[in-house]
Image 1 (spheres, helix red, strand yellow):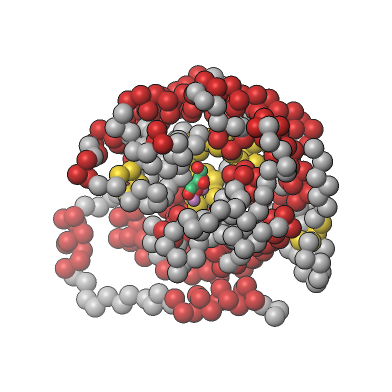
Image 2 (spheres, helix red, strand yellow):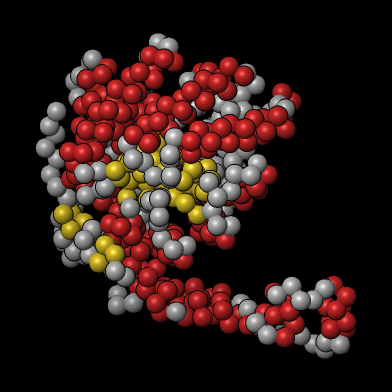
Length: 436
Ligand code: XLS
Ligand code: NI
Ligand code: NI
């Protein structure tokens, strides 16, 4: 099926064309790499191709069925639409759940058969358009079977069904050349401890991830596995609460190295952290992997999955990404949807343009902040006492509590330097808005 979506081009910051990029020029080379390589944008199938702006109080406000009723034909048309859209926007990657790309069958087997047929179709489209799979994942939360979890379900048959779906997704990932596999523990958590064996559930989750890793590696998968932390919603408490919790979990079950983090901006704020905090925590634990690019509304307490437009956030995000050495297997997946009242196909284009331009600006500003060097120098200077004398001994492990106590008793008044927060915040503004 042909959709004839008009190509969105880069026209520069002065352009008044709403359907043009103002900041994202995919071929612009900065630091020896194209912007498209720095940012590695991905389209999220579930929000962009399937979701129809429903909410808890009302049905669709946009129709993405294109008048097609046969289920397989419908999903093929959706795939055609996805690739034409990526082409129009100049997006190279996409991400999906098994349930996003193919119709559900009456049995597990029928669903997996439908899924495999569609994977073959996607492989053809990838070749035709030169697009790549960033990651895929199993939707092990939507069906009623998963009402109390998948790998952490109280029912072992559900654990097995979840495994079958993950296996099919790993096979698809390998077939499609994906470089990542995501685990978002939709219902891996609890609503009340009164009915929950937390120890068994966590051990089972560890067992499940270990089996998935071992299977994928045995089939030659070289990409990264990602855990996508989220503190709550749909369950009251999710085991993958935030990056720090996940890192602790991975260490306990010996999964570090293979598993990294897929950090989502809106999940960070739900966990009462900034997006940058989650990225920094991943980075300092060698667990930075990929990003679900969106933003929440701080006045609403759920995962609103809005397209990211907050430039402070995209800037500090890209600052962390650059400091982590850039993306390797990961990228920026727009796990974001248009608002319910944005009910036209054109709104999808506006949404991606807004998100992509915001990250292009974020990259450029982060690069500028790093090259300017004043913020990094300030931080370095702040810890100077750890580079000589007693501080150096602490860092190098050459002292102990007794020696420190001997040293400390002879100290007089110790002057602690100002943290200079307001100066740094105004320096950040100056770097961001210079020339206005
Ligand atoms: C939900 C999650 C989900 C994952 C993939 O909140 O963000 O969309 O990214 O399962
Ligand atoms: Ni997500
Ligand atoms: Ni989310």
